[in-house]
Image (tube, rainbow, N blue to C red; front, side, top):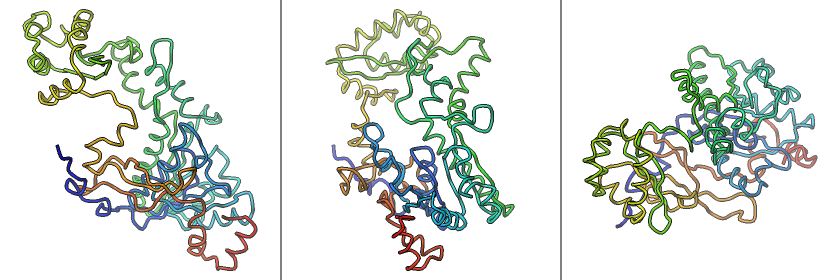
Amino acid sequence: MNTPSAESVMPTATSAPQPLAGLRVVEFTHMVMGPTCGMVLADMGAEVIKIEPIDGDRTRRLLGAGSGFFPMFNRNKLSIAIDLHHADGAEVARRLAASADVVAENFKPGTMVKYGLDYASLAAVNPRLIYASHKGFLPGPYDHRTALDEVVQMMGGLAYMTGRPGDPLRAGTSVNDIMGGLFGAIGVLGALIQRGISGRGMEVQSALYENNVFLMGQHMLQFAMTGKPAAPMPARESPWAIYDVFTVKDGEQIFLAAVSDAQWFTFCDALGFADLKADPALATNNQRVRERPRLLPALRERLALRSAAELSDTMEAAGLPFAPIRKPEDLLDDPHLLATGGLADITLPDGAKAGQSVKTTLFPITMDGARLGVRLQPPRLGEHTRGLLESIGYDPAQIDTLQANAVVV
């Protein structure tokens, strides 16, 4: 079957609206949380200026699971490297911040105060400023602690819910860091609307721990409603009888589901399980849930003879939920993502593969029918320094001096 090109399915990324065009964002961020906020605003058209230390954001040099952080979360941004410890460097940063509509940061409490880059200092000069602060914890008894995604997953119930009983396990991606940046961006968008009404900016705060607790809300309410603690997902009491991963022919795995009585009957018809469909003890979902100890082993035995591809075709034809078990690298060749423009090419700025083109994922929305694409490649360190300094009034000689003294790169 011929897979349609992205161009034939939806407009190209360059046709996407840029609702934040003309907005200047100055970003004092590192790792994932803060950069995610800036990426969202940049994808929506804002000019996002990434302030890096003289030796660069350390995610440029991370290995292993961190090697994709910088190119993933720093596209569509401009880069300037500044030594904030130098008085002239701090002054450059303050002048850039004074030119901004939005300042975003994710440093430890008190860090930005040292350089006159905290909200109170900047808002005194520019009361229209929106200041997005990304922290480990919102202000309170924990706000002095150093937080990481894994820290808050452990203390916030997510690792408990993800792992097997007695074996807490963090989720397989930077879920709280990414979500924290998303919530920060949502706060910025709300503050922009309010500024349009009142003419004044505000500080917006987002935090890893509170993000994680928000994710746990459904399980907290489950306990409040039933008085029964939520069990970890591998040991959960599923509300649906058919909602599981099955190992099938040649050891492949596939997730299959039938979450209503109508889907159960369709499931039985599609797979030729007339005897199960006729069994009065399996007539309703709640009956099937109670019968899971005998039903699931029977299904596993029958499905073990079929291939994942055959089951996928059968479930898709019947309109039933299913999912082959895939790895992240498999998504690079996903026909749906390729056909709908869900992946875009970027050029790597750092490392052994600097200059090579690879595919990255786009922000998962459309605007006016188009995906928000890559306008600017992930920047090289200090790639835009001279132009940015000129934009805030530094003349060529001053810029030469700052660079010669390693105040900026």
